Length: 177
Image 1 (spheres, one colour):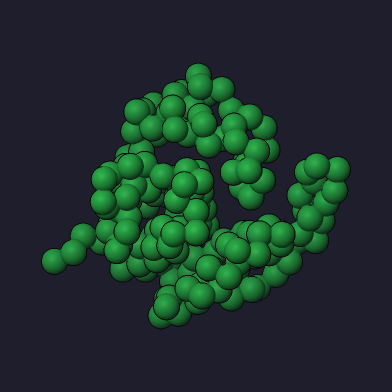
Image 2: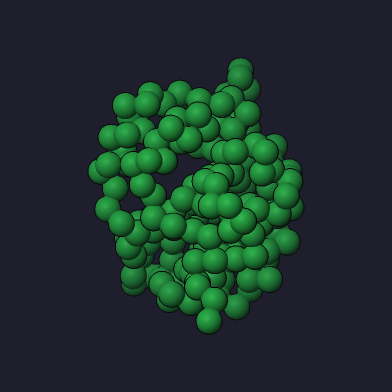
């Protein structure tokens, strides 16, 4: 039986203090930061403190490192958080920080694994996600997986001297492709 934490290319694992160096690089790379909600550079100390303070994945905050199945290289992070047991819903986030793994299907595989985990293990009914409107590549991935556009938060993010929209996508149990 295949682990619910594994896909075809990646596996999700608990985040460890040893992830600090890679996270530090990703959170200070302007190309990576452009499409995530982290706005300011992160210090190595803040990364270490953050990772050391994390509890293991649980219903309230399932935070994972994404690593390749082939060689166990950490390539990014993902989470389901702001979970509501009453509504059976959660907010999803994902970053493929290692740019060498962009456009190789790793993000799609990680999203599929994380959503399956949310629906099949956590018994969620709904998963929500926000993506910046200028991130067309990511939007195509999410819509391919079955996410549907539900809202547009106009001019909600200001960077590089201009505002941009945040698109809210939702996925219900049974819609994952």
